[in-house]
Amino acid sequence: MNCEICGTSFEATNKNHRHCGNNCSVSLYSARKKVRLSIKAALKALKTPEDVNNFNLSLSTIIEEVAQ
Image (cartoon, rainbow, N blue to C red; front, side, top):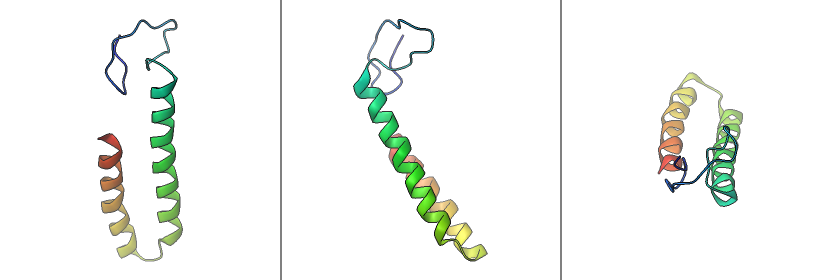
């Protein structure tokens, strides 16, 4: 099995394991937390339909940055 984060091959000790170790798990958690906080901050700022459209564009950018 290969790690979803770094691609390293590893032997899972549990069928639910998808990461090679704690570093990759923490890395994924940090990335998800960053996205959650960015979305939460942006949602607080939405006031008009134009703001919603701009949010959709910035959300796509955030997701692309985290995926890299």
